[in-house]
Image (cartoon, rainbow, N blue to C red; front, side, top):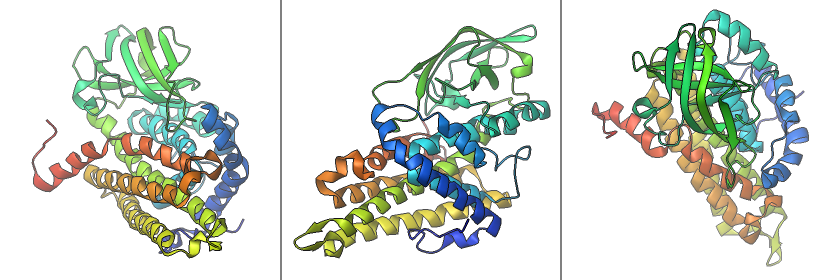
Length: 392
């Protein structure tokens, strides 16, 4: 399948990819355009999840690329970023499904699990046979998860007993396992646990009334004396520093998804501008409409340059927390601006799902907030710049 560079990749960053990476990206794009894009607006409006996409995406290897146990071919972090971009360009909820499965859940097991745990779980998850979620955020602990985690894990012989609650946990209503992060009652350190959904005392309830990422099935989780065997404790998760290693990887991919969501809105606006006739000519030929489109392109191009460099640093082993934090803060802020310009190009039609921009516009709000708010990421960067922490 021939890879065609996106017109919105104005400076040609995709030229950095290998031929094998471009081939995989072309196959993924074809699947997304033919199988996913036609159904997302209906599912978004109904707040339902297209379960058939789990296996369809697995066939495209999207859960496999990053991990040694499942990697189909050698690939770069830049390529994996372009995968996140392509997903979000079509739908940010589908990109979130993959980000939770591949980045957060599989990432937790890969980064903090034992060799035995990685061999047991990663191939099943890569194949889409097991769907995972990531249980860190709590009703009263989001930005302060490092210090404010209230879920407690108590050792009882060869088992751990978990008590607490989690909120905003994507995939948890239908997923097979959730990685739960809890503070040990013994040493006060954060540890991770693989918890099957069928475990007694584990309850996941769908959060209703969302106006962003409506396809994502976010859940409130209640843990009441949930017993987990020692074999399901992530053996290399010994403090929040290990949790942060996972977030460092996924935060950069959220930045890529923000660029993809921006591109999706921009492309829909450009398509509309070329077709919509007012005052006797397509509105694409109006100066003020072109100004909106050029502003979108400038934001996309600047953001793409940033995420490409962050991913190159990840491959080189030089990426630090502040690098991914700056990328996430900057690209999501520019995304918010870009989807607003795209919506304005469509006038009243900009709030109608049929034209796609409304969905990208609404979904931008969730991308802006999750994986660290702009303010929290700014403080991470500010600490690196000044040497002074200003979190409290």
